Image 1 (tube, rainbow, N blue to C red):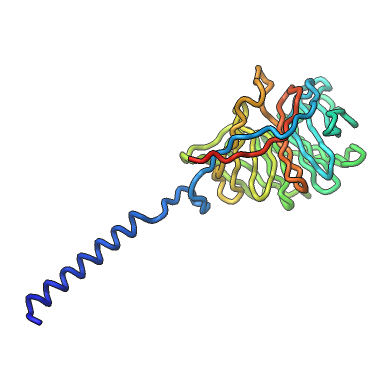
Image 2 (image 1 turned 30 degrees about the vertical axis):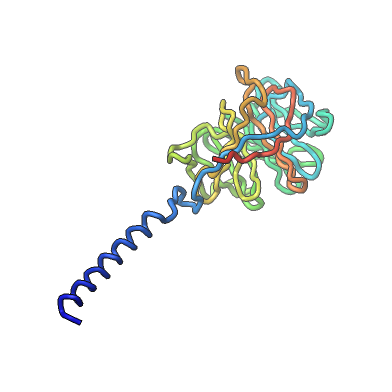
Amino acid sequence: MQPFMRKFLSTVTIISAILASSCSESEGPRVTDPGNTTETRYYTYNVVAEFMHDADAFTQGLVYDNGVLYEGTGLRAGESTLRRVDLPTGRVVDKITIGPFFGEGIAVVNDKIYQLTWTDGLCFVWDKSRFSKLGEFRYSGEGWGLTYDGNRLIMSDGSATLYFRDPDTFEITGSVLVRDEHDQEVQRLNELEYIDGEIYANVWKDYRIARISPRTGRVVAWLDLTGIHLNQGESVLNGIAYDASGGRLFVTGKLWPKLFEVEQVLIEE
């Protein structure tokens, strides 16, 4: 082979390799979530069933545990309560008031119920079966939502930060800043529920529920419940409960006369 031909082929080989490398990089996956989620998913809903709900209940916390619906309500002057509710009828089976405190989120941890207060810096611990007080913890700042992931309590305070707490001491063991698909902080995180490895969070005065990675804080999905009920004043969406054994998702709101079982429907782009 002539020297000039050998040089020409070598040059062609180098150019081809550069072009192949460039094409490979441009056609690779576009990762938008450092938590290994490539894109944010969007869901709408179908209403599977409707249940009666006390229209005087200013719902701040909701948990479904072993066939029983537990609800924490807010407002002052003796209106803040902890309730045991019969889901099929909406009837309040048991109820206690929590004094002058403004009740907030609740979480069931084995045979105990933890209940936050809004601005009093108190978390009450109740016996789940008798609703008798077992103790209390003090914390700084506001209390909004509370849930349990099987090991840690997860708490919101109305900001974009979620806090992980030890259920035995209520000490903070970690935190995560919640950001959406545009890398913007998601403020006003309210009532929480831990479902299949994700934190579901009501956003105060929003019809959307954020589904959050507890590891990265990234919103991996949005559930849009627009139209499920007409919000008026403070009667906003707030209350998420999950029947793990039946795979049922329940939602309600402050002063809503109905509680809904909903099915999530993925919106295909």
